[in-house]
Length: 241
Image 1 (tube, rainbow, N blue to C red):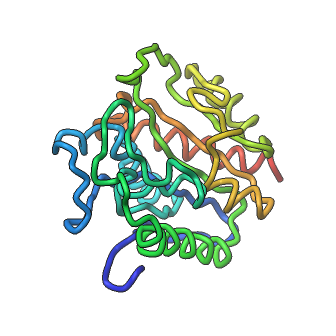
Image 2 (image 1 turned 120 degrees about the vertical axis):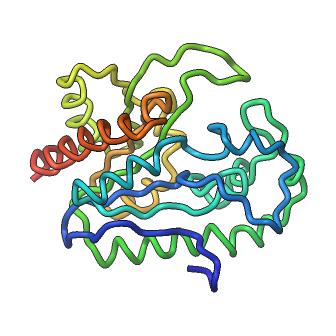
């Protein structure tokens, strides 16, 4: 943690050499001393957090023995799933919504207060657990407001250079009759910051999983997908041995 401020939280008990999960966009919390200047309803949209992703991680941890490291601050405050020098680290707009409080924001303060404590703690945790497989859990909106286009995938796997685990997972999700995206709706060649840093750089296999958020807004959907992800993650780990 960073002093008394909760930058991340952990759920579940990790198994040494097992599987752990990361959720960079788990929260839509905005500290009171960081006025973003957006309407309250904006904080309920996908621009503020990955809707349903935290619920999936809760179930992975509590029912499927996959402990998780979850962010406790909105991506509108700082996007933990970006490189530290990325222009999108502190977004000035997102999907057509202007974020006035981020224009001219104290970038270094937010990096020191949120970004570095989050990633340093995650790195220490990975060193301690020595996982055989990392899961990165995200969700995506069925349609962007700024550039409307159908996004038919139910689940997608993103990857950059290391696609070992993703290839197995894509095949397994397809076997469950899921509509599966292969580096869709985003490409892990461009958007893979957390897994680049904590998995690829260490040689740890990973599955960066994107779930369409309308499928996980309710507890039943979160439970269904957590069960499927838990099963497939364990089978991917076996396939990689």
